Amino acid sequence: MQTKIQTPFDYETIRPGYYHDVLSHGPALQRAWHLQKFQRVIDAIPKTLPPKFSLLDVGCGPGSLISLLDETADATGLDISPTQIEWARENIAGPGKKFLTILPEGAWPVADHSQDVVTMIEVIEHLTQPKILKTFDEIDRVLKKGGTLIFTTPNYSSSWPILEWFLNKWSPVQYNEQHVTLFTFFNLHSKLKKIVPWFGDRFRVETITTSHFIAPFLAPFSLNFSNRLARRISPKNWAWPFGNLCIGIFKKL
Image (tube, rainbow, N blue to C red; front, top):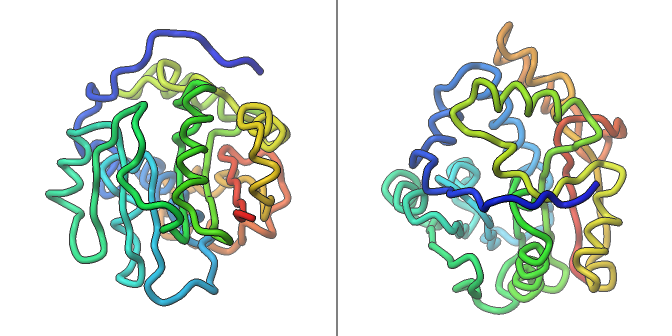
């Protein structure tokens, strides 16, 4: 599957706080979709970390993941959108939770080897291959040895392309304008190693799995049941390759 070439999407056209509003009081399916992906990422954070571990959320948007973390995390959110970061500072920031704007091509204002965990939730598909390489250079720089990288991306070997078509018809946000580098469960690791040639030498696969197969679609009937069902299956035990989101969990060597 090839990288699409198109005019870069203007992320400042997305209303500040839009995705957090969806998470908090959007339609049941959307709320379940977003909450469950954040929960799966949080579940993937190693339980062996020290009490005050450091976490960097790359492409944090309005800060929704960080809003769900408890006070044991020293969390920083990065995003290229000044308006989303400003919204996060006004609505989410607090003790152990801060947000910084970054330039698309610039180095991150984060110290070398300072982070226990780096998360990247549905970001990589928005980047061209050269930008993916640059992003992973920065991830390698800021992540501690033995640190954990967790990222999600749509699984294009699932029903996601059909869902994306419907979203492009009726959602205020057009995903076909944003998703430029596409992954599947089957090519996630191999394609990533082609884009980032050093990746296989510096990171070990912990888990490559999928999520969002059935549970979110039950939310219109019962949001509570949908969320409970999603939490019953650990990412490490989820062998089905056709969930709509890929989850990659990697350990830095």
